[in-house]
Amino acid sequence: MPNHFHWLLKVKEGYKNPERLDKSDKRIEALNRSIGTLQSSYTQAINKKYNRSGSLFRTRTKAKSLSEDRKRRIFYGVNCFLYIHQNPFKAGLVKKMEDWPFSSFRDYAGIRGGDLCNKKLANDLFKLPNEPDEFYKVSLQTIPDHVIKKLF
Image 1 (spheres, rainbow, N blue to C red):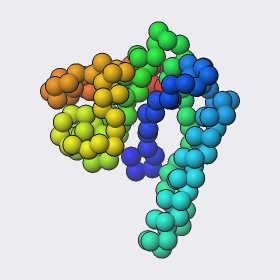
Image 2 (tube, helix red, strand yellow):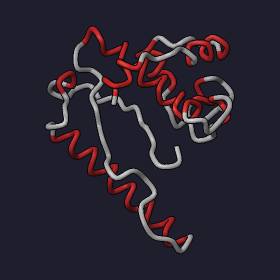
Image 3 (cartoon, helix red, strand yellow):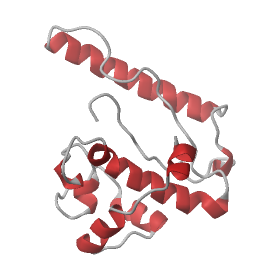
Image 4 (tube, rainbow, N blue to C red):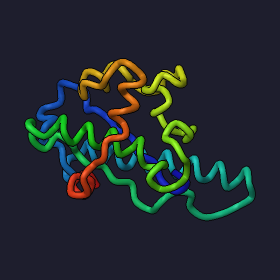
């Protein structure tokens, strides 16, 4: 997206209670700070290179736990996954999801062979179809507005 990005991250096993992470959790605060530092460094480099000033991204880094309760974890996770891939398309930036070059959608759909995202983990967590055509069909599913509000 021109002014923001989305990452879907999984907390490593072994944390005391990964099901109960929330904004008050020190790890979430540390993750937010780290992403903020990354954004700041990137912005400074771009500003220096292009002789510009100001921010490149929306002002706040936010983190949200999608595993608030076990029954809905997969439901929210899948919808977040779909939302991230649909975002440039729904915003009218591209005609098809695979046209957005900065998305992992192309990797999951078998169009590009990138290895930045952990496709096996996403498939294990969300039970995604392995066939590119089936994955594409699933990716076009409409996410209800009330679900989007809970995600963000």
